[in-house]
Image 1: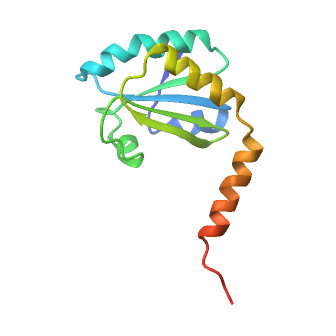
Image 2: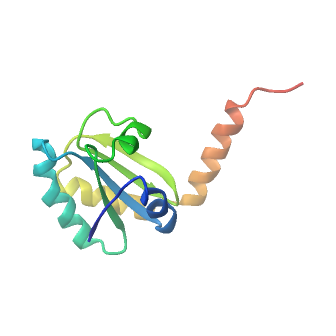
Image 3: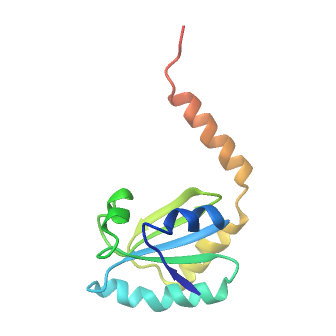
Length: 126
């Protein structure tokens, strides 16, 4: 099942689900219309994952927050960490592979890498 996200429920969707796949789209967007059945098909095949659509016309604040410049744009969050963001239409097999890869990630290693990058980005204090 695909959930419609708004600025009201978006944060809860990210916080309350291990993996969230987000499709930023608009009703007037031709590529978005061709991607919709692909997105829905992969959602049906992965009931353990939250699939979310954000209508950028109605949810301009969310689109601005994530700096969406072209649609469709796909984002994937796992454990509240954005792991993937890409504009454009993905073929069904590519979206399925992406979901499989996200499921298989070692999130502890990713958190350690983020912490390491954050530490390196901090200015050294004397």
